[in-house]
Length: 233
Picture 1 (cartoon, rainbow, N blue to C red):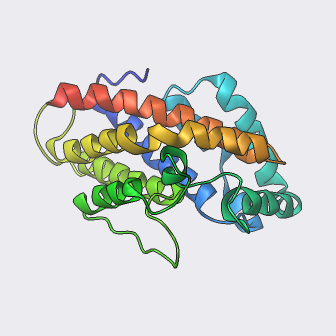
Picture 2: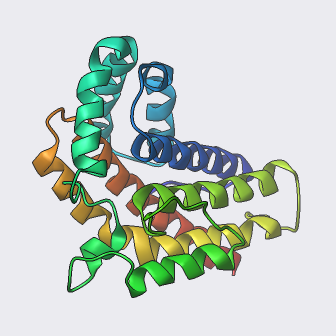
């Protein structure tokens, strides 16, 4: 588990998780282009994962894969774009099924009570995603975008020097508590099922490795948040 015993530790943790939620959101939320792939920083991503205590045996293969992708972006983009389409776009139901409601309902369908619960969580934090036609609130990319926004709020509260004594500044507590609750109630309830779907259908291995990392990162983040929010209560 991530050790957070000082404001310096907290600053590293908040910066790392903020970067990682935005990284995973960009990876799962948009079709890969040579420009986007070439901009990935494998070393920074790995350092942030290490800061969250993700095991080297999980980080290492993805770090090496991301280094290769960034270095050879022009040549690998077409294969990754094809895999992304199969896994997350379709036609038909994407093999990765990147919506919470599909993995948690008795019937595999979109726009269920799960979707509405996610929408309420977004609204409670004043965050309303811009949805295209047929896009459900509980899409993976939107859930990651929500957590990235909350992570930035907490990071900004610390770097802005706002609020209160104790390890966690007062203004950082609400976004951290909301993140913990959302992970427990939503993303960590289905991301491992998503991972299995991606592993079974990914022709490149890139997205399979990425979802494996996402599972570990989200689980470790929830644990760290639980400790922080319980101590701040």
